[in-house]
Amino acid sequence: MTEATPGRRGGRQLPTADELRIWRNFIETTAALGSRLESRLQGDSSLSTGDYSVLLALSEAEGQAMRSSELASHIGWERSRLSHHLGRMERRGLIRRQECATVPRGAEVLLTTAGAEAFRGATFPHLRAIRELFVDALTPDQIVAAGEIAAALRAQLDVLRKD
Amino acid sequence: MTEATPGRRGGRQLPTADELRIWRNFIETTAALGSRLESRLQGDSSLSTGDYSVLLALSEAEGQAMRSSELASHIGWERSRLSHHLGRMERRGLIRRQECATVPRGAEVLLTTAGAEAFRGATFPHLRAIRELFVDALTPDQIVAAGEIAAALRAQLDVLRKD
DNA sequence: ACCTACCGGTTGACGTGTCAATGATGCTAA
DNA sequence: TTAGCATCATTGACACGTCAACCGGTAGGT
Image (cartoon, rainbow over all chains, first blue to last red; front, side, top):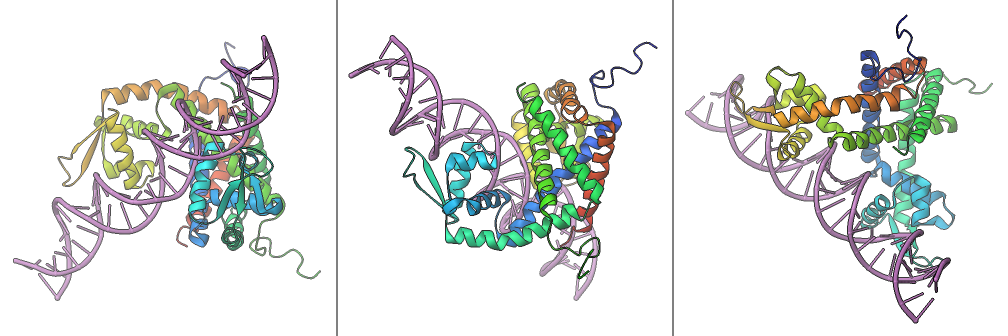
């Protein structure tokens, strides 16, 4: 029994061919799913999923406004990314930025009426697309399993964060 | 029992709150997994996952060369995307392009020795990262389930391709 | 008071992706 | 023959993301 059943996990250096095949299908399919949803949203509303996240957060915020870094951490973006994105959204009139009254050197992000309207128009088709492309594609058991898989992957990402 | 148990699938317009929560975890986690793998590969080898796909295909091709559109369909990219990417890879000396002898107006993509070497150096760390971030994160049952979920999602993407 | 260190936010450079338009070339049908 | 027409590939314009540098202002320590 030389080296048989090697430690169940981590004994192996590399994935098997089967694991690799599943990996490729999994990562490519989820990426394709994301971009399909992106283009559905784009076609239905001229918003990107990034726009949608920002507008969703602002819609639910008090006074339809948030400080920039608060918004960034709420939707899990780097501040640089948010700053670039807000610049583009501001050019399109979806949001406004102004000096924050309470916090020095803070920037307040405000939802404009055009932004609120664009968000309202986008919500229903977006949720419908999620149902069609994700919920309807899977059995109830698979949806649960997908949630567990996502949780397990997230946990591993967190464990290996700093290396 | 007015409208109870509505047709099991498609009777509902919108996802439930639970489904939506799972959806968000799923799509965000898989996206994060992809970008973590991207940055691991970048750190280990100075290659992107796009570079890796191209180099993998060329490595396995006869004569370490393929026609451009052949390569595009092999890795599932649009031709425009591939053309841009090949331009960047050519600037870095990973590949070369030349007129195709057999096919008129065809471009032959060749793996350079530098490209082959970069690919060889990247393979092992990349596969190891896949094991650590994906295979090791899941139970064997979950890996199988992930494969089935990916297949089901892919099938739905194909069904809804043209709308 | 001064130096430093951090903090919130922006900017620039660059890689990446999509879309639409453009060559360049062969195929086919009036 | 020639007027389309499809095909192979590239290009330009633009959106998006990351990284590193930067700016202005506040806070702490000496």
